[in-house]
Length: 128
Image (cartoon, rainbow, N blue to C red):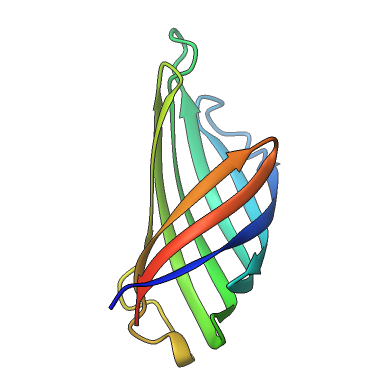
């Protein structure tokens, strides 16, 4: 049985200057989820963009989410993989297998992020 959760979130991205190769950027992620998922998350993101084609880029990220999902408490990890090809995006956000704890043990699922008018929201399909 597939469950659904939805709501909004606020995100703060903080660029990290490693002094390393400037062609790969790194940021920390801090999120606050509201709605069916009431949680905070912390994570790391790596990204790069095409030096020659505007609107082409990619990123990967992992974040640890801690809070409650439709009344069940625990934590889990999300893995992001996103690409943009000449302005057209493709994003996959998946729960890392066997990363759920406490009442979220055995959590599986995929999250979709929606950005409209500068506001962030999510739709999360999951199974427990």
